[in-house]
Length: 112
Image 1 (cartoon, helix red, strand yellow):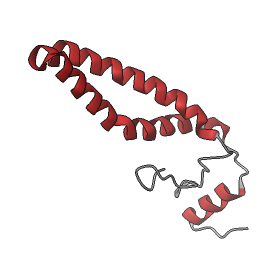
Image 2 (spheres, one colour; image 1 turned 45 degrees about the vertical axis):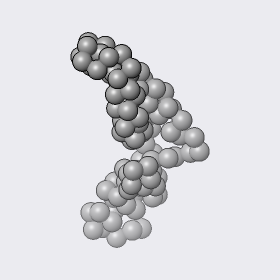
Image 3 (cartoon, helix red, strand yellow; image 1 turned 180 degrees about the vertical axis):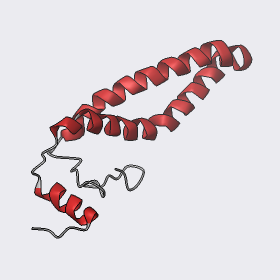
Image 4 (spheres, helix red, strand yellow; image 1 turned 90 degrees about the vertical axis):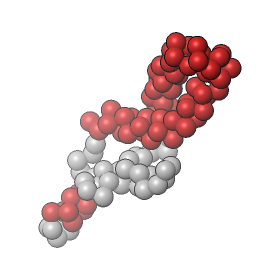
């Protein structure tokens, strides 16, 4: 799905599924990213409060939690798009010419 840290392939190299079928398709992934970010921040807050704060103090615990959260942002970005794409996999167009051509090429069948 991804060809770099933030760059995505236009289509799946195996099945030909187009990842962004319309402009703004991945806008819904922002909601998934938000939910993942809230869950991650909640876990980080608990760890900071009960594990790090007694050892490092409140400021040190908050600093560690913020650094870990910022380091996790690229993962949240990537996985939110993957989850959003999988949620919408049921909306595949089986007659999509690009998808059919990719499947035929993968299976070694000639294009029509």
